[in-house]
Length: 80
Image 1 (cartoon, rainbow, N blue to C red):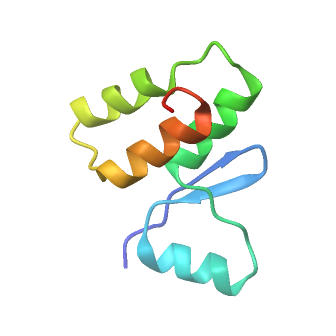
Image 2 (cartoon, rainbow, N blue to C red):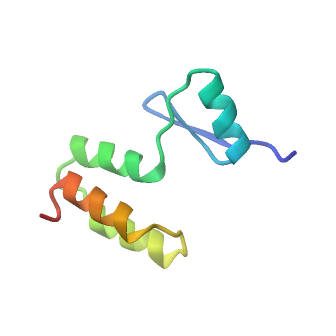
């Protein structure tokens, strides 16, 4: 089994593997995905452009559904 990668942002771990996510849930850890991290950044830094960050992710072939993108932009106030 490959090593799990963990990035800690504001004490919320980001775990890259499905198995790692499952273990984290079993241990009672809260999980935050990449869009969740971007939304938290937007809350702390209103000048941060969530749309630009999402566009950058898409340009780097990170797949996001239209539903997730629309939800994130609406939550951030960048789309009504």
